[in-house]
Length: 175
Length: 206
Image (cartoon, rainbow over all chains, first blue to last red; front, side, top):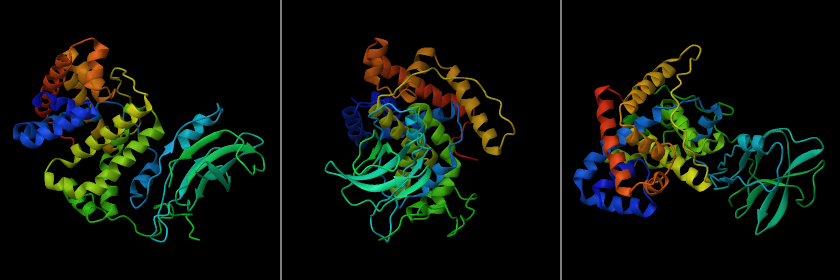
């Protein structure tokens, strides 16, 4: 076990336990270590072989928000919705620190809601949803998010609802 | 109650204009990153962000997920820059390795893996920027090298690297012994390295 795993390792093609084992091997095997850098360069060069469309300019801002805590959206849809795909595509999440505290906020880019509907935002903790307000189309800032809460977005009838009734469009991990 | 409106850096552009760091080496930029210099991270992103995003997009096939992969990879660059410098690898390789790993993790989690063959269309674009010219030249060299590999080696490498398949999954998918897959990947990747070296490929941004 060892040498023959080097290519799989640099291609990220090992199972997790194989990768761990190879990393242990690597510490004891200078030959593998030397060979690995050459294989890594070959693997990294593969990145250039396909189409390379430019990223959206907003990605640079996200990348540079390094002093942020990142909450990942779990993209789960509970109901089919015409704009669901569009929403997933434009929902950007940026979480920032305020006042030097680890107080995350969320930035949401939303498309226009379907006629007669609004997006409503909730802080969810232990399955209990607290109203956090209605969202507009475009950029919304939500926060600070209470510690231990997730942020959820539902689609509600115009004017909003006191409790979530519409389809859950997205939910973050817990802050 | 603190407000979070406008906390996104760059929205107002008011605070600090990025300095021009174009003359610095990748290593120097990493050293600055390790000391908390965000302009240096921005410069690294300007050098490798596009290839990073293109790679991630190719693997995860979803714009938002590709952005997640790139963001997480650059966050790892930011946090581990100092530790990496001590290891003496190439920063460009390291960055692309991090992006690849994040993208593969995402695609395995989301189970959205696909394995289309590599498209070889060279799309004519309007006016080519320096970056585009460089990327196009790089792409040509790598595609040329891939074409020179025996097809079965190329297939194993591409399915693993772009498709996110593990070598065990590939053995099963292709109905071959695991050892065969391993040796195809190993021999192919070594040969690829030689071909790229002969062609003078450098993954560092110009």
